Length: 358
Ligand SMILES: *Cc1c(COP(=O)(O)O)cnc(C)c1O
Figure 1 (tube, rainbow, N blue to C red):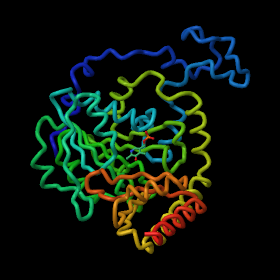
Figure 2 (cartoon, protein in one colour; figure 1 turned 60 degrees about the vertical axis):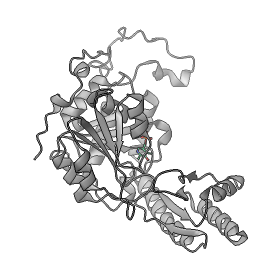
Figure 3 (cartoon, rainbow, N blue to C red; figure 1 turned 45 degrees about the vertical axis):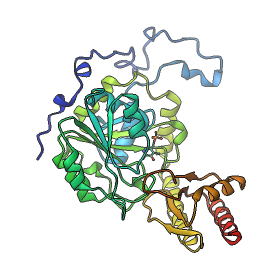
Figure 4 (tube, rainbow, N blue to C red; figure 1 turned 90 degrees about the horizontal axis):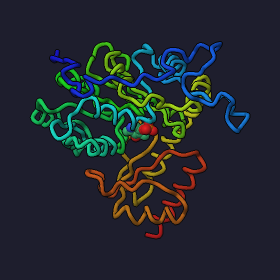
C-alpha cells in the first residue's frame, strides 16, 4: 500500500482557509421559519410562476445528493456536485497543486480540460502518451516520471476521444502505487461493459471518480458534474467551492429526471444499438480506414486521407462532427457522436456519397 497522507497533499493556503459560511448552510430546510438572513427579496421575483426562485439554493444539494448516492451506491458524504465536471477539475487543481512547483500527469490523446485547467492554475502538465497500438497506459514510463511534485494523475476511462476502456488492472495498479491524487474520469462509464470503480471507493483514499449527468443522463444543459471520493476529500471540496455552485433550477430538474430511470435505460439501450449500427455501417465504407472499438457514445473513425476534407463536406451537409486530426495519435480521425437513428442514417448516406465521388 502507498504512504498516502491527505493533509500533506493539501496546498497550505487551502489547509489554513477559513471558508465562507453561507447564510443557508444550516437552516435552509426549516420551512416554517421567516428568512431574513440572506438579503433575498421576500416579495418574490417579477415572474409569478417562478416565485420560489427568490431564495438561494441549498449550498450542499442534500436532496439531489441523496438521489445520486442511491443511484451510485455510495454514501451522500462521499458525493460532491460541481457546475459540470469542469468545475470539479478546477477545484482539484486548487486544492492539491501549487502553481509553478507541482505538476499533474495526463495521458493524451485525452480530454482537453485536464491540460487547460492546469494551464489556468500555472501548474505544469506532464504528458505521457497512450500506447500507439491500443491506446493503453504505458506503466513503465509513468513510473519513471512520477516524483514528489507529481500531485494529480488524470485517467479517463472510457477515454475521450479514443472511446476505449483503459485496462482495469493498470488503473488500480497506479492508484495503489501513487502517493498523490488519482482522478478517474468515468464520464462515459454507463456506455461501457466495465463496472465503475465507485464500488471500491472505500478501498482507495487517494481516488476521485468523476461522473456527470451530461452524457448518459442527457442533461448537459443543467451543468451537473459528480465527484465520488472519500468523505475527507469531499469535505475539502465543499470548503473551497463557491457557496451556491449548483443553481436551484438545475437541482430541481435533476431530482425529477433521476426519478425517471425507465426512460434513461430506454435511451441508453437505443444509443448502444445505434453505436453497433454505426460501427458496422462505417466499416463498410471504402474511405474509412478504421473504426476504433468504443465503450462510449461516440466513435473514432480514421479516414484514408485528410479527414479535413470530409469534415468540411459534412459541414456543408449540415452535419457537425469533431475533427481530431490535429490531436496526437489521432491523425485523420473524426470523432462522431451517436445520434438518433435518422441522424445516423443521414450521416452514413452522406459519407457513402462522398466516398463514391472520391
Ligand atoms: C463530456 C465530458 C465530461 C463532462 O463534462 P461536464 O462538465 O460534466 O459536462 C467530463 N469528462 C470527459 C472526458 C468528457 O468527455
